Length: 420
Image (cartoon, rainbow, N blue to C red; front, side, top):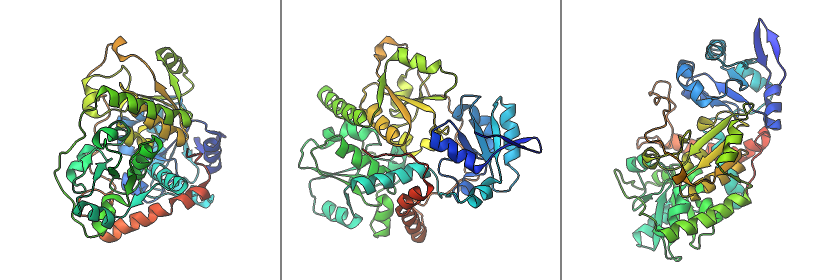
């Protein structure tokens, strides 16, 4: 990437950043404003770390000190302070975006709204390319009323499900779907309906089951709990239904199908020796993620692996891996969840590997992974799909925004996504 100098401050132009993204070079493009401002508009592959959180978050989220980092704001005077702070933390390649967000816009490049934008745009691309089947809220309500042979699987985190959920729904977060759906709905005549709060996790969850060859009819709940609410239908609160345990035969069947999906997406499998080889490459950033549920992770995990539930790792990739162009290795003790997660990360353009190792050969660590303390509500962007008090107009505007993401991806032209 070209470096210019202006008043002794290194800068990168919007064209430099675009070139790096197209070449799949490593780059961390960091918006140092608060999340609410970030959500009003940002480049597709930007990640967000507010200035006040740099000391706490930067070393965790950008682990390699030589990573090329470009910081920007929208004229608030935050970017230079952030650059100085990052240099003080030991980062050696820190630059400011020439002209900030205004410079990006004036260069003719796209600005994306909301948070986790490129994962959401990818979800829309998946539906567009694969015609992922879906049912409207009114159709699902009718099936519930008729006591039809259906199973509603909620692909969000358990805490989101517990806050509010579709009636009769069961919590089966993200990557757990491919592992547990056959156990929940063993009869191939049972229709499976996957929901989330909006669209992305419903689409990805439904398409995961289709990709894995589930014999059942599988549909996404179109527009998730937002669509349910806009249809004037009641949500449940405080539900605790979770997927049952899965037996050995079920595990093996899920593993075979998920591995096939990962293979079709071009995912590579590595052993511990190959992982050590990747770790030794100091010129590349490497993220290691255990994609199981937090309780499983905390009960025993491989050394050096962080925790990110598989579905959330796909939904919130910009948060978990803000260095675009980095490598990602995923693992779980069964395999199916890692394979399915990796299949989506590969389609999102990541160099991703599944660790294929005998966990019994290692001394497992216990407890949480040491991630930075959660952010407070200060500066937070209020999602139009969380909680139970959202305005109908904002929910509809959010859906309208998602519908336009496929066209916006095409205009932006840097994504490199593919859909199997």
